[in-house]
Image (tube, rainbow, N blue to C red):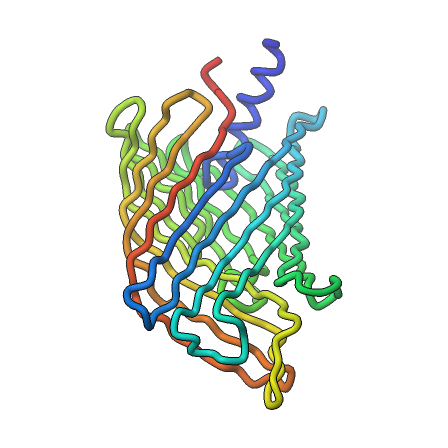
Length: 289
């Protein structure tokens, strides 16, 4: 049991340091964007994940296998886009393989391959449902408080598959911490008490889903792109050493909901800025045992 705890401790420190965020074993998250009025879109997002880390015998390499499920429900209350149903239910299923290798005390490498199925799943799966997302980052430990890096991310985070230069940053000083993967997310948090952290969080996210079965006499729609940028205060509550509850609220802006037709024409819909709230529960390794 002692060796298992030491392994979990080393995994937590290793992954958290070079990946610029706290390592999470499993969790569930729910986001809600309620409609402002009867002419608006109501959107809900649900996600669940599990990560299984393995440390190799060389003590320099960690392999992480993860499974992720996400669901987006878009309710067009006014039926602005008559081509599709009033409510659209979209799904994504991902397998993530992550390799983390530490060359020495300062330098490390992070590689990620994430094949993702993203579709409404209204018909048989095809190659159009599959997106291969990936990331490669070199990370350097500047001192005991600061870790930075640089790399490339191939992702649908901005709605369509694209290559994005990224810069991870992790800073810890007393009760203050900053975790960021610029330009996609940034978090500042302050440890108010042993069980409570408060701060502010900003993140850009999105996805590209394949659609089937939506057409009329004029148009055939086979893709939907969905993006948004959220910013607002965040509270972390830790009722147990291994469990963290997250509550986030604020505004969601730059919200786009675009339908791509078979002839590559795009039906663009810009959603108004509105409030959102997020509830999450994650399980982390207990590094104090």
